Image 1 (cartoon, rainbow, N blue to C red):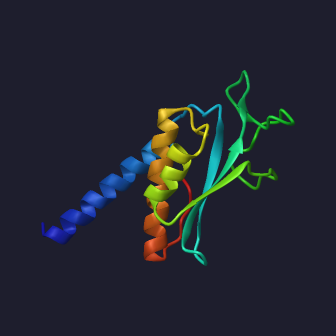
Image 2 (cartoon, one colour):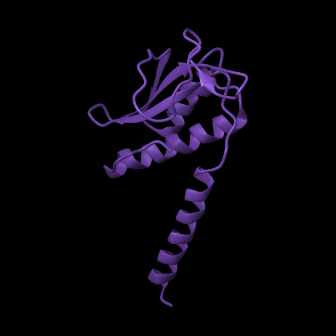
Length: 133
């Protein structure tokens, strides 16, 4: 097997693993959630922060209405805060170091946001589409 074929095989294996991990059950951060996107006109990685509460069924609900927040589709809510950065590191510094209090309360949520910020940075640099996982 040549090096290119080995790299392609490894890339496929890693993509399968990543896809499987994306389907696992996660605990929602009771502090809130982020919608991450790329602003190509300004060359920025953006993260809109929305507050939520977790109900007795483990669902994220709108603190004002008590209604569950859907995981897919458009949600008509006002973001509490907008964080921006030119790089993943700058965005994470804004969220985790400068925001007081920090809007993230779970370590796994912090790790997820770091991974997503890095993916968004790569998409921005390579002019590729970014879809939040």
